[in-house]
Length: 120
Image (cartoon, rainbow, N blue to C red; front, side):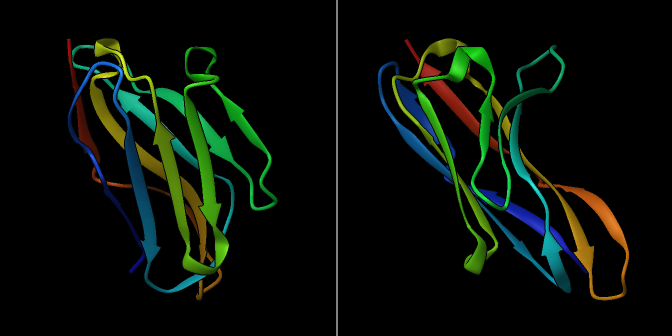
């Protein structure tokens, strides 16, 4: 069984930093591009950033210059370094990735989410 598990969320003051981690585990053959999304109360889930296996990245405009996505392919892990946090960054952050399993199937997986709360 394949799963994604996020960690690193919490409460931080405006201007502070947090680093989120997401590790994939289970019967994994390969992992495609990995991404972070976020969902604030009453809003849709939006892209934060994605990164390919080769390290190519793309960011939502409001995160450019403040957030950095990275991954460690050997550890099946993706990170999100968040700096200069604002109250409007408050949301549940989700990890996402298409993963090929050892049986030859490919599915898109989501983590359970980690809460980030930024106080003013």
